[in-house]
Length: 511
Image 1 (tube, helix red, strand yellow):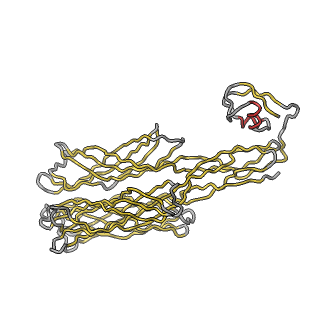
Image 2 (cartoon, rainbow, N blue to C red):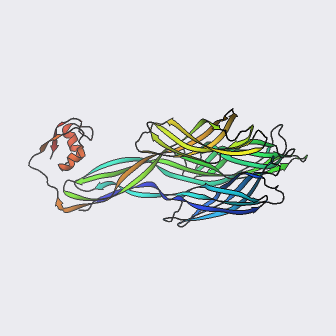
């Protein structure tokens, strides 16, 4: 006996790649003539950025550049100088399948860097970083929503999921000429610069997203009057950008991530010849995903009153996006300085961090590490540099409506304030934390149903009713299957409302 199976599409996301490819950094550098000799290296670091990501067939291609920056002291031991050099890189990664319209989440991770001066004008640098990516494709799985056939009973379930409605990956540039603050001495050379982007608001408008935010930029520069004197300037560059996001609407929930993919800054002269302006170009990459709620009804089990059924099925795991939340935590800590006495802090910043999140006991629990980089003066007025790794934990209340909650997390160190004490440095670190909340489903999806006409079901037709003594909590579905009747028939005969037996006792089973 053949049955007519009605089917619905179940939209799911599938990760087809999640990994990293290591990129070597091997440089033998001779300082250009305009750089002074090296007395001592304070810091060496590599800063990689991915500038483009694309998929051709089953091949993921990542392209970018990395900059190696060296902070060092000149022969006099009083002035801090910076030398930097940039190189391009590319990574080709084989995927397990072709991926059209895939989401590519790409980032870099510094593995290690070693730097030594083989002479006052020569540097030997070795290290590596990883180009990492997570590639997600949208798939359509068919589920059986209804079985048309004589004598078939169905058990159905309605699943409410947030399916991917659209996504956008776009780069834009924020440009501005920035003036030095009142009373600041004119700039001579940039010693250090960094930037991060903050999302302040967004509005979906007709398959587009209007995003509003700012790029926070920080410069450490030497002055034109005294090259040994270093000054810090910080700016916030506002932006409004329209991003194409097909499928985005007011009914969607959004996950929007911003990253500064590159920062270029030059010192400019004003009309008097003093160097008092920074000409800044910040490249910002936006990754936006839109999710819209959809209800899918599926048959989870079935039986026939006439024949045994052969039911084919497959197991499917789904991570359903529930919500994307943002938190800010002011983390307080201290750095001990027994081995590195300092009299003044020139600059303090963060470069690397890690974070994870989980859900337990009605709250989202963040846990991670971040490093604190300190450029300071010792009591002899000589520049020193050191780093310290700090742990942090943060919990926020969250009432999940479902079980089996999974979290993804990211973080940004948005600001560091400090106070030098007798034994070290007291810190207040502003952490911007983000978490994606997902409910995890493990589904048994029916793919085909067929009756085995060689195995008819035995039915007792000698009586109109049968008596069954049920235990509390028993499933009416299992009882109906056993007696070749229907759940609705048992409910009507016994005046029951739910799908499970409430109290231990006798049931009348219509035959």
